[in-house]
Length: 111
Image: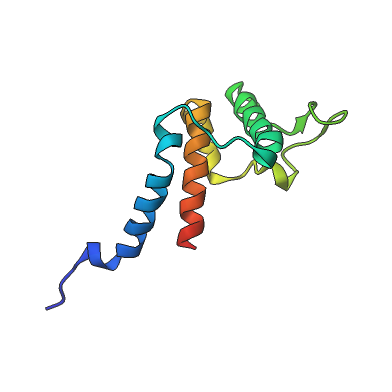
């Protein structure tokens, strides 16, 4: 008889989830966020523009906020097709951004 021990089979994932969660407790439950360098200068504005534009019922094809306007949806750096962007549409912006940051790190650890 084969014993189905779900906890033991996925133990490394639970340990990784625990440590990621432990590291990001100040970010998830308090008003702290790691806004610095590229994240603040580029990604924060892109995510905010994406959330605002999609919230108005439009597809963000073009952004007028860089230079004299540049393609937004076609630019891979803006990551419009990131699956976690759905969080930006369902949750308050700052919490969704925090959750995206934590979930991305967890998935990178899973590999």
